[in-house]
Length: 111
Image 1 (cartoon, helix red, strand yellow):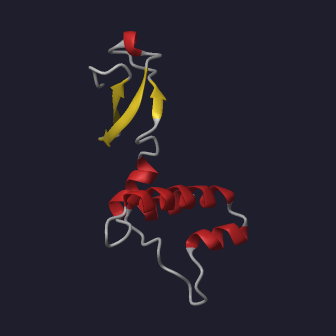
Image 2 (cartoon, helix red, strand yellow; image 1 turned 135 degrees about the vertical axis):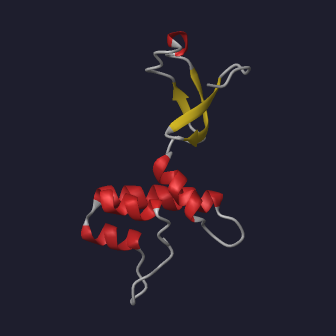
């Protein structure tokens, strides 16, 4: 699904249909491309949840593809600069520059 991910990041319109009315998700299901189905379904769900009055934005699709943990409960790990936080739980609040900002449970601190 590398090409698919690249297309979604570039803002591909997931609402486009073939001449007989099929979406990319429907075609992926028909052809048995399980990984593409997963990527498309997750991106569509995220875009539906973040769409404005005009429909899904390419930004919402890109966020779904690039930052699938947004809004999810996560456990911190691999923090060499702040090892005391490894194993703590929080919610992924934003994603920028390849890094998540996580609001720690119990309030107070975000990392």
